Amino acid sequence: MRRQSLIAACTAVLAAGCTLAPRYERPAAPVDADFPRGGVYDHQPEAAGAADKSRSAAGLAAPEIGWRDFFADARLQQLVELALRNNRNLRVAVLNIEASRAQYQIARAALFPALSAAGSMTRTRTPKDLTLSGKPITTEYSVGLDVSWEIDFFGRVRSLKDQALAQYFAQAENRKAAEIALVSAVADQYLTMLAYDDALTVTRNTLATAQESFRITKLQFDTGTGSELALRQAEGVVEQARANLESQQRLRAQAENALVLLVGEPLPADLPAGLALDSQDLLADIPPGLPSDLLARRPDIAAAEQVLRGANANIGAARAAFFPRVTLTGSGGTLSPTFGGLFKPGSAAWSFTPQITLPIFEGGQNVANLDLAHVQKRIDIANYEKAIQTAFREVADGLAARGTYDNQIRSLALFTSTQRRRLELSEMRYRSGVDSYLSVLTAQTDFYSAQQQLITARLQRLTNLVDLYQALGGGWLEHTGDTPRPSDAAVDYAQAPGRAAGKLP
Image (cartoon, rainbow, N blue to C red):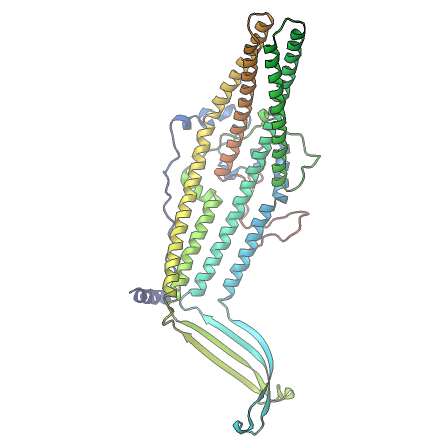
């Protein structure tokens, strides 16, 4: 039944002049038609009034906003520029496009006749009693052109070509996704470094305050007006602050190493001055649009769809394997028993060999290949749907976070102020003899913790905006208003060696 249905399909294909690949239909998006609403999702910058902000996206979608306009920090902008020029993962992504382009050209070349020039000399010995001429050794010289061409009646070669082309487009979209992810990763890592700088400042201030408290407490203990319990408590605060300082210095150094890896070279000494963490002014009022917009905005989704298109074309090649392959081979030139007679009149020779190969028994190989092609397509459909679901979740998470961080930071800033005042009052009560040193110790710990929480929340707010910008497809343009580059656009590495990505012929 399968072979009969394929024969019927083949008849329609020959009449239509196309391949045996099934008609491609984009799977329905397995997500809701809208992003979540209500609750935290209603507290978005555009709903709260973006006009109060110094910098606004002005209603532009993320893919239309250049990363130089999204980031206000000149130091961060230069780091992103360096990373786009030097990052090795991005270079690999560009080279993968080159490799896929070559694979496509290989598959495409099979559509055309193969022409080659050949020259040969054949010397043969035959037993004398088996020769007509009586000469046991004969010599034959030939020179000419050989031609071979598979007539693609059933679209096998065209399906393989289409599959290679889809793979090329998928690699181009992967490169675009890699570049967008790199812009986001550099920004996230840079902001993490700034957060460690702020944390180190807080810890150093805490250590200085603890050392002063320890000095006073030790003086009181030495003069007999203070207890050893208070002395040891003060000493413990100093040692804890020192331990925190060492830990944060280590993490700060490792964060810089991670940034150097992303940038692809040591951080230059002449980088412009940067902004502090609480001075970063990222665009926050980017409209999310609809989930269906992600199909056009997200290169990872576009890459998954190209892989699916390739699987669809591969089914056509698997179907064509059930039908005859028609190959035409021929040669033309001259033939002579002597080298000098190759180009004399009467030495012309030619041959023409049409060949039809029909599969009769292959042990189920063709059937298994077709089954495999169908299974692979179902796998690619699932991967495509998962890519959409992942994108939907990333945007929804970003919107939920964007709607809560501003209020959280505002509350944490007020909480930090209360803890600072509490510490001042606790120190006054302790010095007045009203309270024990334990209240001062507790107040110091809570104030330090509140400062760290505020720094962490500020970092998370900024990295969430960066990640939301990426999740919505932003980061491909350098400047707002630029004409978008093709996904396989050439790359100018300036001083970097290597060949850039090229266009398909």
